[in-house]
Length: 442
Image 1 (cartoon, rainbow, N blue to C red):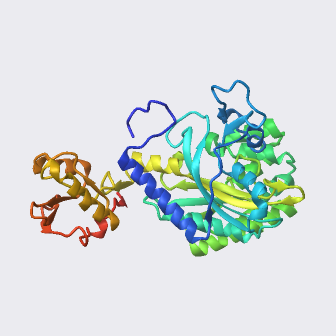
Image 2 (image 1 turned 180 degrees about the horizontal axis):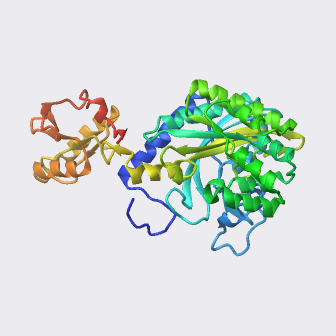
Image 3 (image 1 turned 180 degrees about the vertical axis):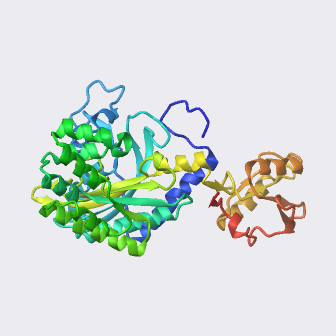
């Protein structure tokens, strides 16, 4: 991770690092599939107009053009790389609504691009892993609970420290702000969203400057943002502030359901945190942010929420709820902190040695027989002394070397222990732990 990149913000992993990233992706995919989510992939580009319809990231979008194009067609003008997977997914749902069964459960693991200042955990090209459930016209609130639990399970299966999923509800926050007389709730949310970065004093100044809040309103808004509980006791704490509003009550009830069920199924992993606002403006209810315990400075590694009007088609609306996991952010911290190690740097389990160059074709037969049974094998490039071929395997991290004698008999050597045994390429199997590289918690 100390290597200097030739182009900042576009990470490239060494083979052993890539194995760790692949392990993360495999765990996430397996967990999502166990929860019944189908995999989709959307195109890398969207129209600029569509990308900028929601949120405030117009300065971060990478535009796309063809260098040799004399004149762009109408369909190709104004294209840009997607900066997340939620907005493309909304388009996908609208365009394919007639072919989907609702509620539609999808996961999507793809690259995204965002033109911001690179730093650890924040890249210009990065991989996200999203899960969403989308309904047609209506989506039961229980999916807000289900997705929180699915993500906690997925992240808990990774070789990383414990995570805390922090949950709030936009209805709760907006109802509270209206209840204290602050009608520009979007501006209040934008200010509260900066609380961890700039602190309560500066947030208070923002509220006064941007929303016209007085000292009482600022105090109450900050008191609300200071409430954090691992159970449903936040309900009484909010009501103790003496603010009444119908939307506030609706949000309190929804958040109570999420945190109450999570406290039973994943105690300590999901907490009510009423400072969570989420900057994007398409969230309408539950909002989530997830931090790596002890590494809060890294920022959120998984975030999302409920959106009731992101996708529309005529009179039809497609409400949804989803979360997005920052795979590249997680892998970057895993590598920099040594959270996980791979048992070897290459997939190869067996190097088939060459006694002489004429034995190359026979060695390929051995390698093919091993591969037919799922054993990764490669053939030595040249018939050097066996000692050199063994040292080559050792440098590559290959655990076994295969030898074929002139009489056609075979032996395989575990170069870690020195044990060498008679073997048959049609039946020999390495120990399960050596069949493929294994990623383990360091």
